[in-house]
Amino acid sequence: MRRRAACRAGAALAIVALGIAASSMRAMPATPPAASASYAPDSRFAAVEPGRPLTFPGDFGSHPHYRIEWWYVTGWLRSGAADRLGFQITFFRTRPDIWRGNPSAFSPRQVLIGHCALADPHRGRLWRAETIARAGFGLAEALPGDTAVWIDHWRLRREGDTYRARCEDRQFALELALRPQEPPMLNGEDGYSRKGPAIGAASEYYSLPHLAVRGRIVRAGRTESVHGEAWLDHEWSSAYLDASSIGWDWVGINLDDGGALMAFRIRGRNGTTRWAGGTLRAPGAPDRSFAPGEVAFEPLRSWRSPRTAVLYPVEWRVRAGSRTFLLRPLMDDQENDVRATSGTIYWEGAVRAYEHGRPVGRGYLELTGYDRALHLR
Image (cartoon, rainbow, N blue to C red; front, side, top):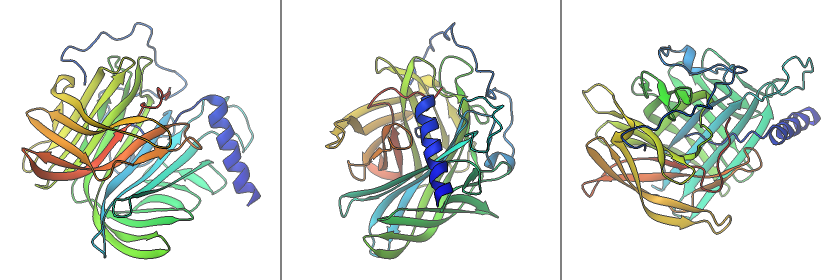
């Protein structure tokens, strides 16, 4: 127990001391602004570059030479009582900027963070939990080669053709099996996803839409069987946001016709769109990647958190190419305050998607940088 506490305390101190804000990750005008002349890649970390093909199962696993990485699982569940629930299970891996010659086993060469949330509109409640640990000692790890990441009893692991996910807290727990129904959707240029005007501001990025979900949840002291559908995002980067960017808006939607939409925009310091992108998967057609000028986010309605006073635009109109979607939240209060582990606050919530006034899908919306600018570099 003492060793576990020491690992967690050391990781938290390293995060604070080094100023790492490892938040959940996630348009630009038609003519991109010029890249900043002051931008330069950090040679201490591996660089994301175009032209590197993603290969599987290797790229399902960890990429420890990059500065930051995350596996994001979000989705909708239905319980036996026919309740509609939203859930999020996320693991982050960060590589702190420390002297790597330190021989101590307690030196935090990699830090792992977990976020978990369950949105219950019937009860008007968001259950949430977070955890943090330095990698090592058998307590926490993110392995290369295939998906295998854990922090104590929290885990996400790919076993054969199924992902096994688990997170737990004193008040709630999720234990889910997620089975892919289709191949990975490579975002950007075959997985190379630009996040700003500079070529180096980018990530390697793929999604797995339409994951079939079965498992159980514990809430309010009761265990319930659940089933539903989910979305998995996996990204890694060493320079996700440049110095002129403060955060992003992102959405991943499982469309009812079997298609899928991912869209995002990076916001600049004056609140305007600095960059944007997206991918549309339509049945029977090749995946389509959108250029910055083809994606637009228009806020329609906002909600102010009664706890943090942060104002979030929770209802949106999103244009992706020739299609326009209206996004409405399952419930307004889906704010995730994770300052204890990641030093940030963000909104991560289940949303319904509408097109031409008709419901066409369900997914998750992520809003970051509304409390203060994110610092991921």
